[in-house]
Length: 130
Image (tube, rainbow, N blue to C red; front, side, top):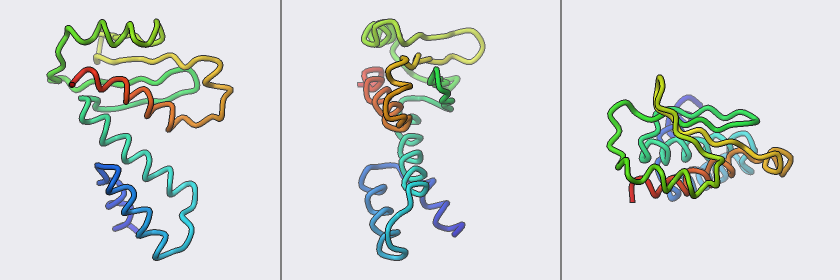
């Protein structure tokens, strides 16, 4: 089991995530939702690291994404990114630099899929490095 957890944690692409899910299905049958979540979270973490996000904290009201100390983000891309979120994203520079996304009431009362919500936020944050 420990080897499987390590391999899941090392997932860095959609293809690897799909391959892992296929392997688990072949070996154990239907992949439980909790295991699928682990695979999805590993993929999110990998995507976040490519965006210079060192750590994420997801709560009911916010998604906080803490940036690496020496991140090489083009500062001219920050304002357009924040504007693209219509006031729901802010960039905090006190303490550890972080992007903080405010989850709307509608998003909180939706299907409750924080993994999909976080994935969508990361997709839009790709403009920081494109």
